[in-house]
Image (cartoon, rainbow, N blue to C red; front, top):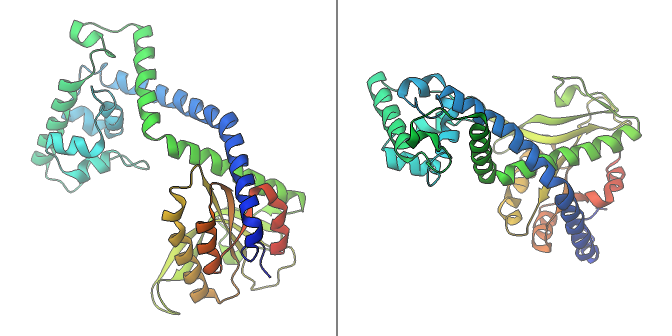
Length: 321
């Protein structure tokens, strides 16, 4: 017997309650998350301005030392330049710009010939120097040093542009933290503790849980190449026996109905890979909050994927925790 996948008569009511929960959170907490990110981003912009001598010293040498400033420089022009647009305008290699804007490790393309690298970085520098917004960086056309008020003002404006470009990820990250906190609170109330750092899914002991756990699965069939798939929550029930597989949970949130159906196939693929690797009894469920319509739910149900609504988080107990 399922938790929710076999109860379509409850879906409409649950969808409405889930939307209400998400909207309530968004109205009261999303602006705070956005503001906090804007403050930290403004600090980064201020540091970048200092490194570039307040946009007066943008050069290949500067970009080599500090590739991480490129997204800030793109948002410092009039109009702001999208990443792919910069590639076209400057006539540079797309991978060079992608590497410089790598969120984990901004870097210069290591295999590019030095002469070509310098040429392309010079083209990027020329575009930024030519298109720097004179209404934000008023000191540039006046050829003077900015005062502290101007630095703070320009940093905030560029930070707003940067945050506006990544508003959805900011909201998703804040929502993920909130959902995982809710799961943690429930599990801890039942005596569960966080698994030790570095413990793999098959080393977890009963009564522990972990976040962002990699689980190896066969790419196709029951043997052959394996890949690691990330799972948001792994829970080893208190009653688990040696060799048992942890319960696997994927947290999902959505702020509109438009995009949820685009990613539903990802969960179906994960479920199939897990079944191929660990058998049909593997427990893989979704933890939902927000805009998930009956089309999405019906697709997941047809794939044998069950779900728990956050507004009824105690349904996690039905997984056997």
